[in-house]
Image (cartoon, rainbow, N blue to C red; front, side, top):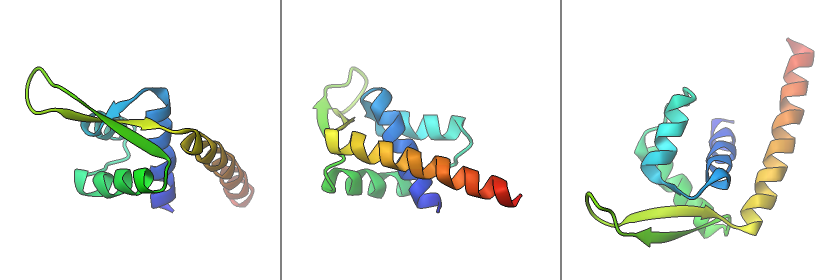
Length: 97
């Protein structure tokens, strides 16, 4: 279940604006969804391989070039479905508790 929630959150973060991996990690940590880079990078690779995201390289003023992730139209569609599934799940759990 956590994997699906992380996918939803990562796509939502990238949908707001193109994001660098450390920016995504910081947003997840702010939301108290503790994620280590070892969890995030495979998810970002899978999202790219599945056609939900693309990336571009940008030069950095303070170090090596950075890979910025961007959501695709397919990713937007998947994000909409994941949001709907999340709302359904919340409703189901609320009925029980």
